[in-house]
Picture 1 (spheres, helix red, strand yellow):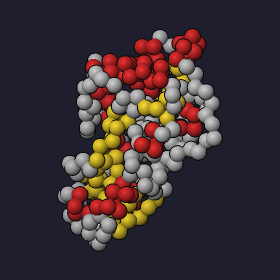
Picture 2 (cartoon, rainbow, N blue to C red; picture 1 turned 120 degrees about the vertical axis):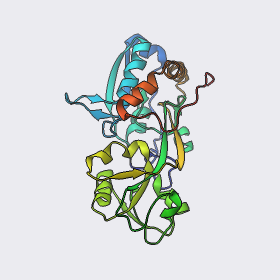
Picture 3 (cartoon, rainbow, N blue to C red; picture 1 turned 60 degrees about the vertical axis):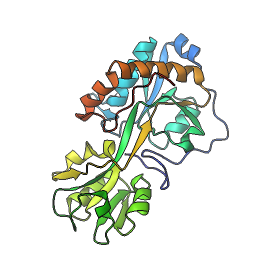
Length: 271
């Protein structure tokens, strides 16, 4: 899904920016008076963000952002961001909110504020139906000298492998297409990553894939706002509660993923 610090706690983590001072965020009343909400979305994370046939940014995040803007009675401006620059964009007041699988971590919470969770991410094992060095039916099967694992450099699977499958052979690559290609060509047997990162891209490779049923870990993904922008955050929390209560989030999720969220968001009116 994204480039992350090798010891990061969640998918989608890029090295945190070290900015001396952040530009002042637009307060809620300014967003309402200008009738414009700027949302940072990464279009390279399908189906969270993608370019549609009109070369416009679309996807799950865009649908959520559009509904938030509609309920705030403002216009939505989508700003393209990438994994490394989404937090700097927020801190420099180039965007008001940021989506794009911005997993909730302690490191990020030190520099930005989060809403309540929008969705979850679930770490799983991806392998093939056949053709692996040894049968892989449970996560414990990965801890074998004969198993060849492939991972995107710095992703959440790396520390999990270090802790749980240290005997496996591990090859680190720079992007997901290269990892899927290695698996498809038989140069690797499995990878450990977030299901939401792999469920769509793996369909581009003609392989009989298998995702193990066990969820290794679940992560919480909220919407990011600039540190201290509490008025905007509080309104977003109320809107997200309504989007969960009315089923809008789950319906939109199934629209893009074709399956329910692996780890559902608990219905909780308190925040």
